[in-house]
Length: 272
Image (cartoon, rainbow, N blue to C red; front, side, top):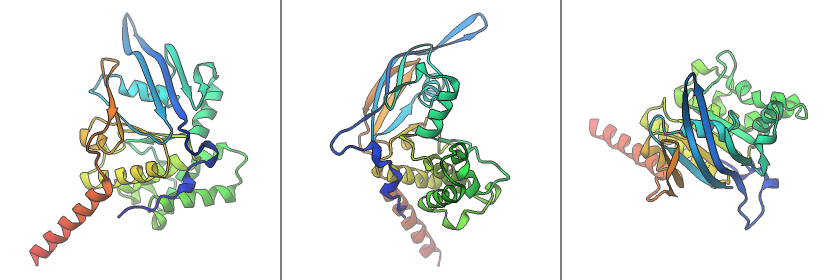
C-alpha cells in the first residue's frame, strides 16, 4: 500500500518554482585520519553537487570512504581540506555550537540501528529534535509529532515503546523523527541493514513517497537492489568517486509491494 505522504512535509520557503536549488556542494574534499604513525586518506578530492529533490544513493565497499563522506555531509565531522556548502552555508566557518544548530534545523538523520530511546514512546521519540527549539511550544510540538507518525503509517502505534514495535515500525519512527524539523535534506545510513526483504521494500516506499513530495534524500547502502530505488548513484572506491550517474531501470517500491501481496494471496489460496 502506498503511504500518503503529503506535500506539507516540504518547507515551502525553500522551493522556487522552476528553479532547482543546490543543497549540497563539495569542492576538493579531503579527509585524512592520523592513526598513530599511519595516515589514512579516507577521501581524496571529492567533488559532488546535490540538487533539491534528488534521491541519491552512495555506494562502495567497506573502506571506500562512503561512511566518512556521509559523516561530513551530515555535519558530524569536518574535512581536513576542501570546502563543503550545505544549503549555501560554508560549514568550515562554523563553530561546534553552530554546527549543532545547523544539524538540528536543516538535517534529518535515519540510522541502521534506529537510535530510539528505549524508555520513551514513539511519539516522544519523534518529538526529541524539537526540544532544542525553544520557539516551538509543547502543544504544537506534540501535534507535529503526531502528524509525522501519521504520515509514516503509525497512527495506532504512537504510544508504544520501541520494544513493542517491529523493526520496520521502529525505522518508521526514526523516519518520522527525521522529518519533524522539515529539514532541507535527509541522510539515511544503511536504513534497511537490519530489516527483512519485505520491510526493506516498505521503507523504500516511504522514502520514494517523501522524494516524490520534494524531499532531498541521501542514502548510504552496500546493497545494489536497495540503491536501485534511488534516482542517482554515486559509487566510491579508495576515497574517490568512480561513478556518478542516474539510476537505470529504477525500482518502484509500491509496485514491488503489490507483487509481494499478490504472491502471498496466491500462496494462501493454493493451501486451501
